[in-house]
Image (cartoon, rainbow, N blue to C red):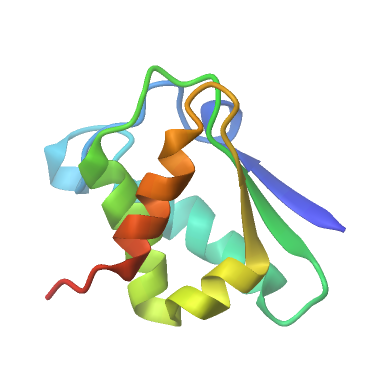
Length: 107
């Protein structure tokens, strides 16, 4: 069974920047209130977390890095990729971009 996060519907059609202090709908807020709790929910199950990236006004690179890179830094890239799939029909390059952020180390 898949559990889906539709960012436009479940969070915002206008995702913001990296941190809460940068403004509304930040990557940090998305990570804390939606992404990490849903990942924890599927982590030790047979379920997959499906992330739908479509129907937003676009993404700041800092949002994607904070949310998805942050998840990988906390739980490990390989663990994340075993449990998460992405949908991005409007901008398919975003999936590759997100996986790049998952590879990066940041202090």
